[in-house]
Image (tube, rainbow, N blue to C red; front, side):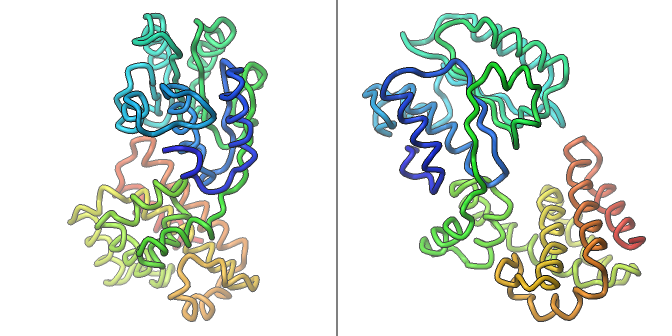
Length: 325
């Protein structure tokens, strides 16, 4: 994937293209921006351009190095993701050992740390020492929701590349133009980061089912556990949908946000526009603060799953919290 395949973020592209053209590539970058802004896609495109055998301001997408990056098997590209809820010091130490070896070619080694804001204190301090004396030529790309989310000392040793909120309308339009279902496309671009991730989500067979379960759960009165509510839970945990409870909870948060949109006259932003009439009639049953609290409960439950809380327990506790208001 080259820069041209990524929608928006023209300022970011200009910064990275300039670095590639002049070959003044910093030893560390902090890609900071909200979910959906395309940070992950841009990081891969940048890494691909660094490795590209043709050089220039973008990856050719055709050479052997480009194809290896696209297929996820380039020997000099290392990606670190949270192990559970955090990036741990053992992962950073293993990365440092790997980067101490000679490059498979004559050029750069690149490593990306996803969700770098989740690094433990020990991991962050270990990385900090590595950033201060990087083995050349190594390029770090750290991904985080904001510069404030990581240690100031790490920010000071990295080139900050700020991402703005992704143009979700453009992403949605691109998916619909490809023939993807409009309602699923809208939901996906509000959950995933960038076009490729949104497309992948829409193409999952279970995604439409999860959306239907969210509507079913959302329409149940939060003050009682009805047979329909129990049926919806069983639909999740007696099927393969049980593997996607985190997405369900994130969609629940968007369902409650739609209530706020209905109360504030921003119906055009709804993620569930097909449920607009029902939402408009129900939204005033709580205050805006009440819906915000429900959103927070859903997102907290999703975070608990990342922290290895059993999904069924997390969902049941969420439903209790919403019922109690």
